[in-house]
Image (cartoon, rainbow, N blue to C red):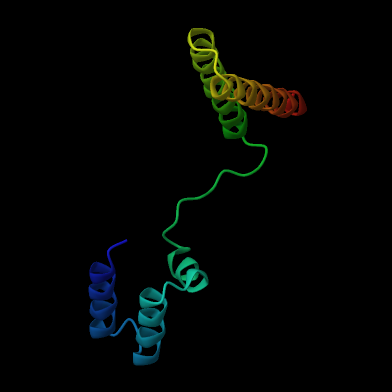
Length: 114
């Protein structure tokens, strides 16, 4: 987010009469002091809709995470096989646990939709 651009937008809104002086000052304060709550209220109409729980996007999301974590297991396993030092073995073990948990989450989500 470019603060200068956002300030210019606020100024043009105020100049057109779409914002009162009070609204302009509040919006400017939120922008300058990074008030996350205020910013989320301002941008709520412009934000993209989030997928709801139970939509088909959820299965794809779980699958992609499980798939890419499995790829991490393969690469870290190869690295551990080439140079079996403690860091490579710990990385392999960690990625293996993560991939397993991700696949479990995927299958739980998938079976609950069936």
